[in-house]
Image 1 (cartoon, rainbow, N blue to C red):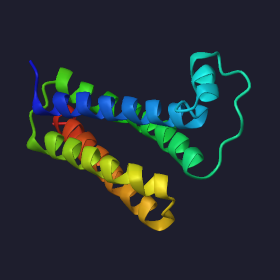
Image 2: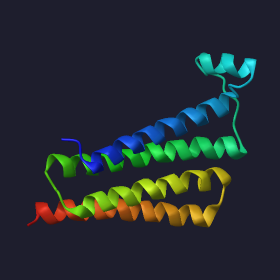
Image 3: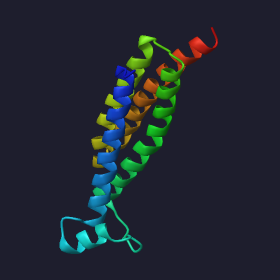
Image 4: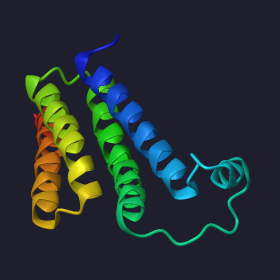
Amino acid sequence: MMTKTLMILAETAFVTWVLILAASLMRARAWTPAGMMVAFGNREHMAECTGLVARTDRAGRNMLENLVLFTALVLVASVAGVNDPQVELGARIFFWARIVYIPIYMLGIPVVRTLTYVVSMVGLGLIFVAIARVAYA
């Protein structure tokens, strides 16, 4: 059964894909003819990236790393039938914190980036606590 929490997971996966695609196209400079050839190639000799492109690439990798944790928690809650509203709240907090995190990371705003990341971890914590409450009841 499709729940709101599973839909948030799907939306997060989509955002992750868009971010990774954007970082890849930016790194290859795919809007230029030479960049298009790089994008269509095997990318063995990619130039080092800096600035916005490097931050976008790191934001994509960071999003992918956190998607793994988010996916695990959402799927455990779903499979275990944890229907606590805290699961959906945690998923919403995680999703929106990550949406805010992406441009902050891309713009290179360090302290706010870390605080936003912590908020997303609070969302994961809420999901975990709801699961643990059921598991250890």
